[in-house]
Image 1 (tube, one colour):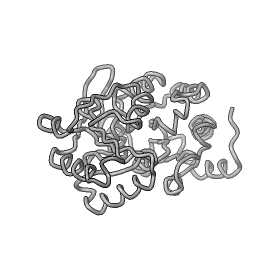
Image 2: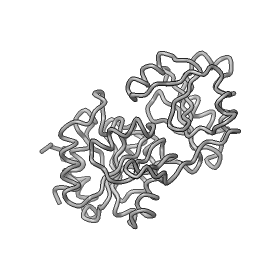
Image 3: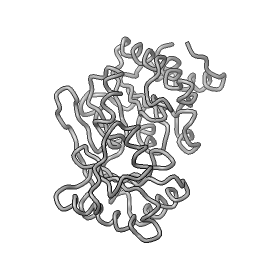
Image 4: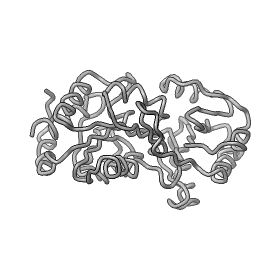
Length: 293
């Protein structure tokens, strides 16, 4: 078993009264159950298996594409629908039923593309449009290539991305840049330009700016999975995440766990702070909060 600090154990005591009520565990992927290796470690898999043995259902909620997240869903043996694209796409891999698909409107997508292609930004950003669980890009940049390798998908270069908008609306729009200040400025600027009722804007990692439908975020998706599909309440749910796109699901859950590698703003709203992903923090959280009761 893993060891936790005294502070973590004290925090567990605060949440302890609710831990026996947990019936659903929802996990982010990158930075939470998958670190640099891009795989789930054995200790994390074992902890998830032990939680399932106690009757706790387990699900994935990720910003990844559905097909990129599928192997992680299979690795943990989840029987629930998979929450992908920040909640814009919810699908049961077994039945292939799509419970929810909330794309970005064509008008909003065109506006964002115009913004990204301003002369001072165009050469700095790699822009990704996700349509029908495929990745469309203007060109294959270094950032796009690295992203594709980690995601296990093949991007489709189309030149002008406006071409794909004539027929489809994107599930998600992503802008990548190695300069985190540019991503921060992008998020700040566009958050002032668009209200939360128009677009959901977030960062999944420091170099990823993401935009989805305003009704698509992990909090709304986890609530749908818990309440609509499973008949549960927030106090029956524990979520674990590591970044800004996890805020809403951490706030929704009866127990929201932030990883030790999460930004301080994310840790601040969590009920409990786990060790980092490279220290198998998700396993520690599961063991201390769900298995030791």
